Image (cartoon, rainbow, N blue to C red; front, side, top):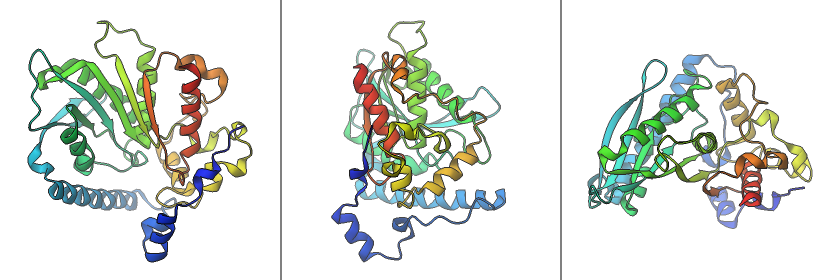
Length: 311
């Protein structure tokens, strides 16, 4: 039985920050009463959060000089339903790709509970990677709740990935060397996409085969069906220990789950039980990052534990 509760003890640095900034609602994990509000309120909350994230990303890019050192290309990818999916390709200005040496590709899906996120809001994260590494970064802005429900987000993730496989060579990228990654909800999309693609034979061997996945605090399991039987006790679980945690308390996760409106959350793509290991054998190398005071902590560590068992 697993017990990761020792990771949920606040660090001395966090305790000092919280003490010195008692009015920081971000640190306190303040969540407005959004469950009973009309959609107009949710859309305004969405716009406000996105504006704040964009302003922070722009300030960081300017401070670090990434507005000059990174070249960005905006495109629209056709979705399988109506509309299109905005993507942005990042490349370091001094990175050169030739016909004989295209750049590896990192396809990135942002976090935000499937509700928040924009291309501009991820500029700092993606520019940093493109500036530091000899790669192309493909930033995907999948469609969000409350306007778009499940499975739109997964469809957009798959459509944008398939577009990348078919077209990234035009932009100097190597379709033979693609890594998928994401944070929180985006980490869940990356995990689902990698698992799905690992079970689908490639028409052209090597092309489009995902070489690795990077899962940052991934949302893998709906809160309502978290497998507490895999833990030493429900009390040591992250959904209990971190229910009032900063940034992402349990109430917020449950709201995101309701907004996503997955019709059958029990039919989840990740089986954290040991009998689900067979489906993991074909997965590529994986990096999993967690935060100790996060309700998503335990599912990521349980998934990581199962990945280690099959490698």
